[in-house]
Image 1: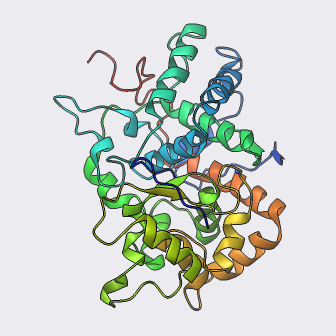
Image 2: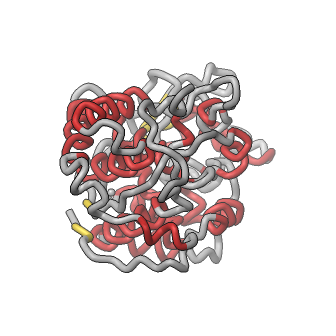
Length: 338
């Protein structure tokens, strides 16, 4: 079972076209209803194509970039909603979410976001928000990797501050119990189906040793490895991530098709080949409602693709800033005028 030993970064956290769906203002307040698929049709009609082209170029030299970009969107939306706060650098008044535990030395792809934004500013100055860039980039990353496409709702505006403390407390952790992770999804009005579907983003990308080494030698203080970890995979990972090593190794989240977006993530869970504790818990937590969902997605890729696309739409609708709230950042790394 091949593993890779390179740098210390992590990726995380998709052709069915969803062209119709119902938007209910009962989700996340009435602001959700202000997002729409044609928001830029008159002001930046090529926005989606510009995003896609930039990601295609990035994929030529970095096969991981798609997974990295969708992880930025995920980590952004779970903190203050989908407002691109994760993109802000430290400043006199801002403690960057980039330095929060879930993101420090692991969140990546910021340079590609900047390249997308530069291309959009050249075509349509001051029009497309950084938060919409993340939403569009996620869809493009998934569809370019063999996953589904979906109609991205647009019209988000960018936040004026970051929330480092919120990033530390609200983003689901790979070391948490399934019940804790479920609570974090519930807090942003995402359900168990969303949890399992969005976890399927781990069908591509990489993870560093520090995100799964807790399973390899002394799981939960037992003195033994995690019993839900496939023994062949365990042996490979113990070589990659020795007990007193540097933690610099990385390996694929999906052992079988590491750069393709498919449903193999779920079949991996059925053979105890989930890399992260939080992944394997979806199938190995006795009595959990997630087991049946994993089983259905493992046996039916089309069902997974449809569910994933809808759950991405749901996640993208977490507390967006619309109307006159927030701003359209000219540089995604800083608020305007700073």
